Each structure stands twice: as C-alpha cells, then as structure tokens.
Length: 379
Image 1 (tube, helix red, strand yellow):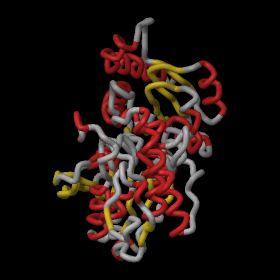
Image 2 (cartoon, one colour):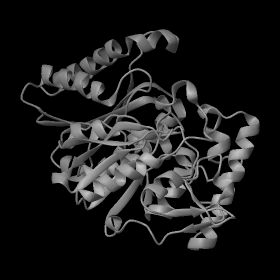
Image 3 (cartoon, helix red, strand yellow):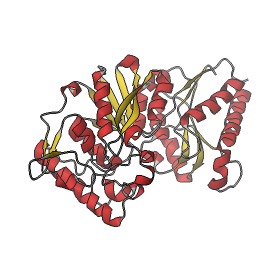
Image 4 (cartoon, helix red, strand yellow):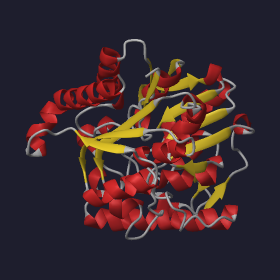
C-alpha cells in the first residue's frame, strides 16, 4: 500500500479521533513503512472541533477575550485555516456546558460570546466562517450571539435587551438594521448533526433542556419562550423556522444561525469533507479507514461513517470501518452505501464500564490484525 486515509469520529467517552488516528497510523506504518498516512480527525461541531480542523489542515489558533455563558470575561478561541481565509468556531468554547459547572440554568446563560468570536473572525478578513454547534449550556435561540453583532431585541416597552433562555418570551420585535456590516459577504456554514425543530415535544427545550439544568416546569417555560422567538422572527424577517430540521440544535442556536447570520445548516461530516478536500485527498488512496464508537441506526442518518462511505463509493474506494460495537442490521445497511468491511474492537464479552478502559489496547490489537492480514495477502 502506498497511501491510507484515516478519518474516524471519536469513540465517545473513550478515545478522541486524534488518538484513533495515532494508534491506527502507527500500525499501518509498522507493516507498510513507506505508506503515506493522511490523518483527518473528525469532531461533530462540539468541543474539540477547532483542534481537529487544525490537525487535519494546519493553521493557527487565535485567542480572544469574550463573554462566557454568564456574561463574564473569559479567554476563548477560534481557528484560522485555509491560509487565513476560513475561520472555525466551536460554540462550546464560550457557551459550553462544562463552563457553567455547578451553575446550570438555561434561563440565564447566553451565546453572546459566540457572536463576539464571529465578529473577531470577520475583522480578520475571512471569507468563510464555520460554526460548530454542540455541547451548549444555552437555550436562547442564538439571541445572545445576534446581540453581539448589533441586532436589537425589543420588549413591549420598546426597550432593547439581550435575551437569554428565560427572557425570550419578552421579545416583541427584532431590529436587524444594526447588524454589523463586517459580516456582509462572508459565507457562514453551521455544523449541525441533529434534526430537532425549534420548539415542541422534540424541540430544543424538551429534548436538551434537562441536561442543561431544566426541571419539567422550566422546560415548558423555556419552550414557550422559543416559540415566541420563532413567531417574532417570522413577523419581522418573514421566515418560518418552526419546522426547519436542526433548528432546535444547541438551545435553538441552529435556527438563530439561519435567522441572524443567514447561515445554512449542514451535517458536520459533509462540512469536514468539503473543507479538507476529501474527494481529491482519496483520489490516489489505496485504503480509507473510518469508524465511531457504535455503528447503529443513528450512524445511517449521514454521520461520519456513512458520509465517508458515500463519498468514497463514487470513486470505487475501499472503506474499512473500525467500531466499538455494531448492530447487525446497521452493518448490512452500511455495506449498501459503500462500506467494504466492519471490525469491532472488543475481543471478549465485557460490559462497556469495563471495556472502555481497554479501548486503546483493543483498537491497537484490531488495527494490527487488519494490517497483518493485508500484508499477508498482498505478498
């Protein structure tokens, strides 16, 4: 083999995508010392997304002082790639759940810092901004980020305020006229891997509110606020976002990115593949290795493994999948869309609470056996 492309998702709770690339890459070079190994670690838009892009493409991490979820100053960051033409922002870096620790309260948290990062990147003269959603502590529909770039929210007294999850129901009108001109002409793409709507039983507040600290009563309160925001957006911008798949992502930030930043929502893996020039990278590849923690029905909705397989199939490339576990039905379906083979790393029947501590060892063992097999049949 002359070239192998590694493009795995993380094994949630055990191994990062970068760790997986390192372990598998080492085994490839053990048996094929002259083989070029191209590593493209993948993140879904949440924590670690910036580092994954920088690892895959090179670039620069830029630090900025912005507001944290409670409007307190903090040092956050974004990545510059593509020779400074593209910025990558992960909202978790300034609006993430780990930042609130014991202060979980989606009525009070804000995405204001995300808007500040977007403006900072725009001031650098970028032509494109990629915003990763995921791991947020917020439920403000992106209003905080919008306020940071000059959009004004008015209550029934005509007073301007910065809405949080607990005050979105106070929004009576939205004034878009002050939106910062620096954003004009910049393409903004939002990485979003869920299809929940803004509000309702499967919306932002009901599905994700509890993990952010909302009890059942608060969930209903938050949901009414997001519904009101949706109605005001329709009134003042003329766009109905109530049924847009992904609008409920990250406390309805998905809808906010459309309404306030004229962004399009795109599956995370498609964003990654486009950004790294995947189609060209694999053109002379002998093998593509991808994977994730578990291959199941969720995988088949276009996440990393399937996204990679579909692109690779167009070029007739071999795609090997390494996973922690897999559902039988999902394996067959994966074969249909371009996966060549699936290997699970767990060697003995063992509960995940135990096997998770052996993930690195088990992955190395599996990768070693795959390379050993390929070496033997290629002689």
